[in-house]
Length: 188
Picture 1 (tube, rainbow, N blue to C red):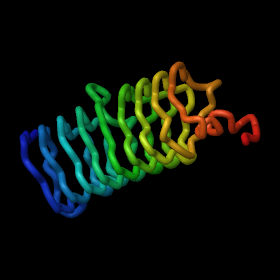
Picture 2: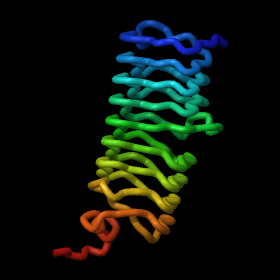
Picture 3: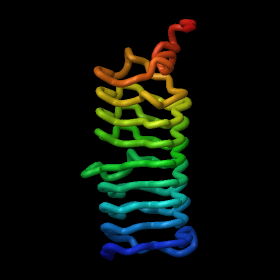
């Protein structure tokens, strides 16, 4: 396994050029295309992905430890396949539509200005997560721990309080319809 530290990889199309399997520590990937690439068994530690396309990449046993994604396209990713040891992610201005975090432990995860449409968050630990200005259209929350999670600026969500732990979770008054939608209540 190869080891890379403090390197920048820019404008590389990994769907054509092979990325060497290995451990990447404190590396930056800028404007790279990982779409449909097999990233299984790779380790990314304290790395940053900026303006990359990771859509439909394969993530079997991939390690993401303290990894930031900014302005990335990440459609259809299966994060539940990742190595769960040390899993720590942060997303800013990313599109993660149709991805899945099923059964992930994501305490204190941050999503800022993200598209999270049709995301699977069932059986997740999302304690103290922050969904800042995120579109959660048809995102699925079931049997999830949402205690102290911040949805105060999130929109288009539908969360059933009867099927999730929600003690001290934050919501705006305008977002209450996303908690009461199943009751067919009209709010004025």
